[in-house]
Amino acid sequence: MEFKVAKNTSNYRVFTVKLLSNGARIKSQLQRQLWQAIDRINTLPRAAQLTPKTVPLHRVSTSNYVCYRSAIALKLSSAWQQTPLDIAHQLTDALLTLSQEFTDAIGINFTVEVSPPGWILLGLSDRALATYLQECFKIRYFPSVSPNDLNEKFHPKEGRGNRENSQHNQPDSDQLFPIQYVHARCCSLLHLADEQGLIEITDTGDGGDGEDLEELFSVTTHQSPITIIYPNPIPWLQDTGDSERELVRLRLTHPAEWDLIVQLFDLLDVMSASDCQRWVKQGLAVSEAYEQFYKSCRIWGEVKIHDLPLAQARLGLIGVTQVVLRSLLEKLGVSAPRAL
Image (cartoon, rainbow, N blue to C red; front, side):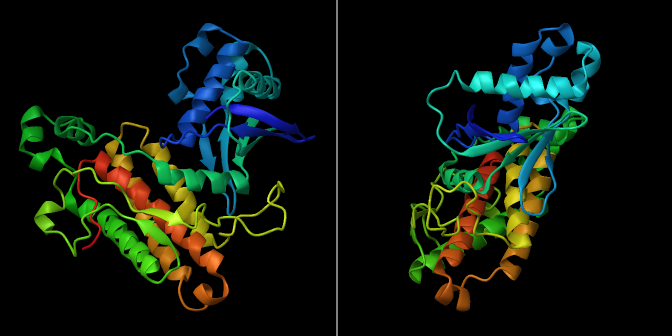
């Protein structure tokens, strides 16, 4: 994604973000943009030695807002002999300059704000979040990790003999089964919703009634995930009467819905790193968040009858969960079962 400014206010700037449709993670793309802005401002040795992955950027825990915070201005203050606040403002200006070099940016809003003593805050508006969730259906599969590489990442300190004795050099099956279960549960619910007319899906999978447990941890044959083709787009946003309003709100407001959303963000972010243990740990966090979401947020019954768009938005979130977990399982080289 790239930045292109849309408007200014006294406190922050609202950028238009070019969102790639190949599953690019927000955190890694923002780090790259900040890294390019640093190089544009100052090429001091310390700045030049930074890489995109070493640019500090962390998602801030909030109840109903997806926001990232960077301390890069504080990190550069000593080397540049400037106050963090001045550097932060220069970096936001550089982001604007960089964004003007891209003319094909598509529109989702991303706010950038400077906060004392030099924090750079980057947040997704509800409209932007809705666009991002919709684009998640287009995530391409990550290449699966080879057995040797996978074992090297899971057991970097073990000797070669121990690594060769590990079963197929794969993570423990007990670790991955909860993730596979949630993936299968998502598939079942999407099929049920399709049968009842809430949504329409396309599924090129085998549609089997289950899989042999011995096959659950075999390398996958790449099949397309279930895709929701109606409604398209998912009614993520509340109806306001004016589809162009900037302050339109996300339909998903329950704490359990937001927790699942941010856990999915974090999983996509960590999958850009090489630490497989973090992939599994965050995949389990998504699985736990999904279970709480399903317990707390109804889809059928009164919700289906009286608020069909909300039911469809929640099914959309289930669809995104299925796509992201499938990408994780394929990256780990194991089966993503549609039923258990």
